[in-house]
Length: 70
Image (cartoon, rainbow, N blue to C red):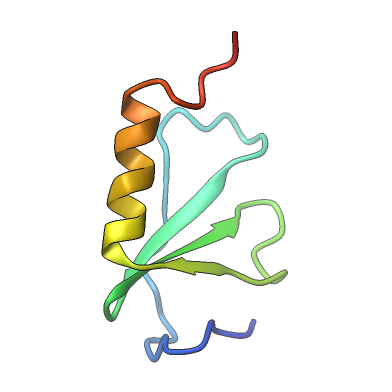
């Protein structure tokens, strides 16, 4: 598995939501000064990385229902 540029810790502590039922879930890890996200079904297919401020903006929007399906 390749690490995103700037991630130096090869043994990331991946977290997954307790609401994940084995379906299309994402895993999240905190590394250096960023948040790293990957697909739980295909963990070797790469990762996305976000700054703390980007992740905070995303999680706030989720909590406010910005991505809820009608």
